[in-house]
Amino acid sequence: MKKRFHVKKRTLLLIAGIVWLIARFNVARLGILSYQVIDRKWYLYLFSVVAFFYSGLGCALALAGVVFTRNYFCYKQLIVKEQEA
Picture: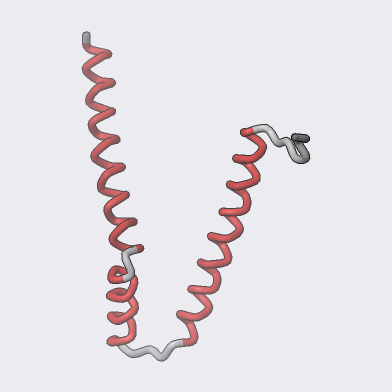
């Protein structure tokens, strides 16, 4: 079988990162634009926060932050112990 497309792994990773960066920017831009259009009522802000966390995305991001922080401090303590020994 012929290889039609061949891209190095690092190049593919760079392309994927750029695509995700553009997509992330567009989603954030759409969110900001649509958030400016809604009425300025307190219950709409509360509903949007509840909907964000209820969708699972907010919980996933919060959990990822907690896990990252915990792992970072464990790694930092390990490095300090290795330097002391």
